[in-house]
Structures are given as C-alpha cells and as structure tokens.
Image (cartoon, rainbow over all chains, first blue to last red; front, side, top):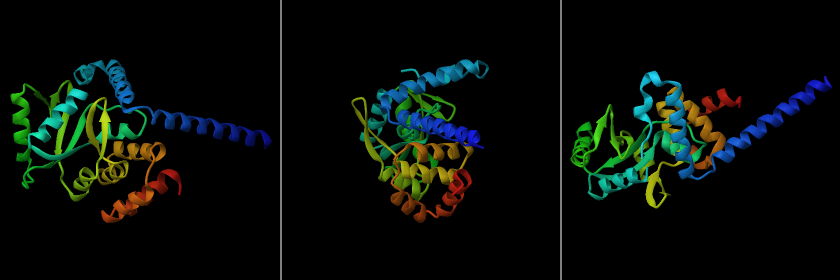
Length: 60
Length: 170
C-alpha cells in the first residue's frame, strides 16, 4: 500500500514537471516559436512525404 | 513571416480591409508551446458593409497583381499560405476589434486574445479546436472573468462547462 502511494506521488511529480515544461515552452518568444514551427513542418513533411507536404513548409 | 505581415498591413493601409487580426493555429501558438500548423488565418473586418464572399475579390486581385499565387483556398504571401476570412459573426467581429497588438521582429501586428480564441473554438468545436482549448487553458494566462463574460454573451457558457467537466472532471 505504501509503495503504491509512493509510486503515485512520484507519478504526480513527473506529470507536474511535464506540465511545467510545457508552460515554460509556452513562454518563449513568438519569434522562437515560429522557428520551431518550421522545424515541426519539416519533420511532419519527412514523416509523410507521400502527401507532397513539402509544398506546405513555410519558405521565407 | 515578417514580410507576410508587412504585406497584410499594406492591404489594411490601402483600405482594402478595415482591421485584421491573426487567428487559428498561429494565434494559438502565440499563447502556447508551438503546435503544427500550415497556414496563417487572417480574420478581417471588411472596409465595406457588404458581407458576402465577393469582399475577398479586391484583396485577391491586389495580391495577384503583386505576383502572389493562390494555393488551394489560400494565397501564398512571401512563402506562407494565408487565408483571409471575413468576420462572419458578432463573436469574430468582437475578437478582431479587441485583438491585442504585438510585434513580430520589427513589425506590428494584431493577434486575437486568448479568451476570444477559446470562445471561437467552442463555436467551431472541431477535434483540433478541442485540443487547442485544452492547451490554452493549461498553458496560457487567461482572464477567467473576461472569458466568462464572452461565453455568457455568446451563449457558450454551458458548452464550456460541459467541456471542462468532461476533460478535467470538474
């Protein structure tokens, strides 16, 4: 029972840390976020090249 | 993206639109960690009172004269597919009117407030809207009083409470 409680606490800590990480990422500058977005588009494009997504990656 | 924003600002300066604000995925990114999106939604209040899709014609004509090409339902401005969406209801019009001014690099632009974004997404309520509502609620700083006022005004409070109850068990 004790172990299960401990484990739950640890999991809660883990999820709290995860939430904090996402919240911190949400606070980076808009400029940085757009740079990350383009990287995301490239990754998505690489994962599904058959959809010809390369046309959709922002080019500027 | 700065060049794209400059072109949109020019469209406004030329009087082709009265006011605009960024919405959709890009506006969401302003408030939360980056999420995947491919286009830039520009919600705008038309210069004329006409509220049909023909109000898009002068914008597209002006852009095509500048050499920009259409791609599906978008027009590609400086490498970014942009969709111009005329305000189609009172909520969207309020959202554009109350949009917050921000700076992208050295260029001023407007982005729809997080509270209005939530309300708009509650109206459209597609699966991706639901995901984005959760992200905004979890990561952005929300003025809950203002959000509740908006939801009350547009009859969205019940949907919001139901949605919040479903996801957060409240």
